[in-house]
Image (tube, rainbow, N blue to C red; front, side, top):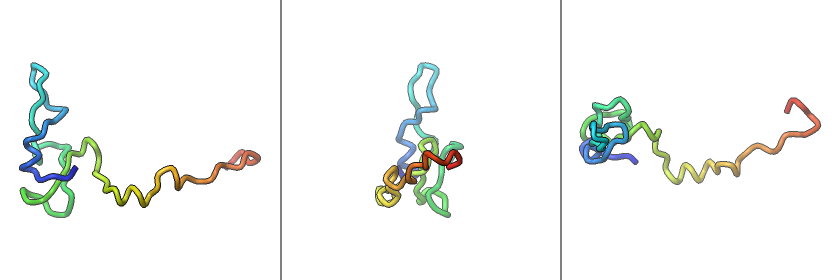
Length: 81
């Protein structure tokens, strides 16, 4: 989920824990997993946690079609495809 770095600092990080096992807050751009959404970076630019890979919009997901755009089944008589 794209968010500003200042807002992400109030979200919990699954990798940062205390010795007691409690979760700690996101470090934002100080973390190696933080990714910027666009060309600019800084406090006013949106970013996301790279642990979950890049966020994908619902519109882009619907265009790809997932398994609906899968290739037709292979010819059983041809062992090479």
